[in-house]
Length: 151
Image 1 (cartoon, rainbow, N blue to C red):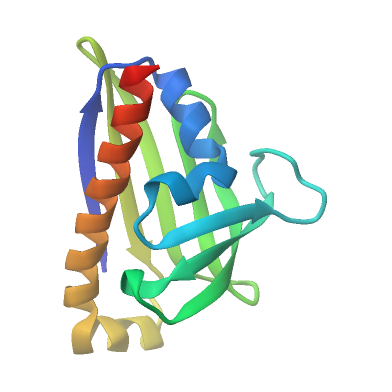
Image 2: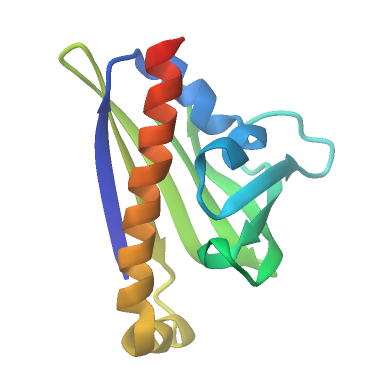
């Protein structure tokens, strides 16, 4: 009920973190989330801040909004958020940045909540969703890599 992908980027961690934590740019990189916006007067990343993402599931639909809460926010090191259903986390997304050689290893990961409905979902098709998530995480990171290595 979890997975991760790591991509090396020839750029400093703080530059990459700034791109990741700017959720208003998510639509440039994610295959499924095509826009995001901060909520409740928030204008940037902070622990506990909320935002919403506009999702086109599997790039074709359905289309819906998700509300998220920032769960990790350490510049240059990590950024994470939980996708919420009410106040409960359904899925946790996390980015970890580790200096390596000429740049930074960036790991994006997801972890589904360990609740009965999510375990049932994983049992009856979640493995396909896990494969899709890993493919999309790689796509997201590779798109980010092109931006940070070009700038």
